[in-house]
Length: 298
Image 1: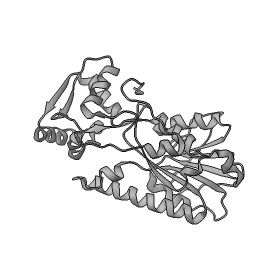
Image 2: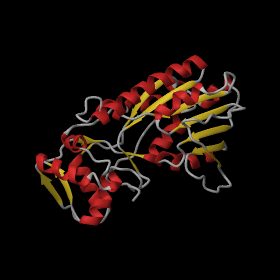
Image 3: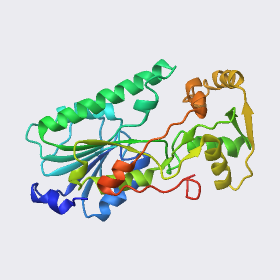
Image 4: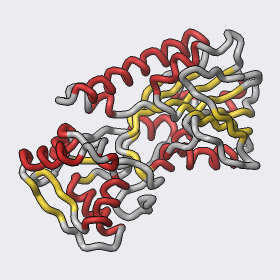
């Protein structure tokens, strides 16, 4: 892997790291990692910023705001990717932004043919944002890298692993469609934060897109079993026929806690959603942890 020393040989030394979506799962792990490198960290969030002596917090609406970049800087964009191309377009032509690391999602691939129109729209928006981001960065001479993570967990605020854990705590069991043998590769948010640190100094990663999966492949059923075990509970799994499960989903989605559920989501329990991260390992040493025997963040 080519190091940041070589990167700096052709670029002025970077001391400012901007982080959009800083209160997200990945942001919570990325901020301290950036601080440990001695970078000045400017964290952007639409929420009221917390008080911190180590991080400069700015409350901004990325739909309309601009970045005030006056010295050589990095941008780690963890907010929704469709917000990034307009944000880059609003930068002054001479803004010294040298490096962009941004997050898309493997959903742009897995939901492209979904039965749910809303999911197909999300996939299309992500793909369009990826294309626009790369084109804008190349036109402005900004070194860019895009990450597509799989199912993210680790901070206790996700709508997959943490949702399952909360359901188990409340009801003592978890329902699945049939055998739920579809393969999954959950990825810890801290491993994605580490990928940012590993990739930004690497010339090998410039103008590339990487699928970032977790370090363990397991079935949806086994993933649920691992969550039971993390909670110190004996797995209690109920297999429900698909038609009945769809009826359950329709009756639950009016509740805020279950609004994110869809029939397409439960159908995918029996579909493999696997992605190879070998390129990321080769280019910048990405090496994610396994799922079953690690802290899941809840």
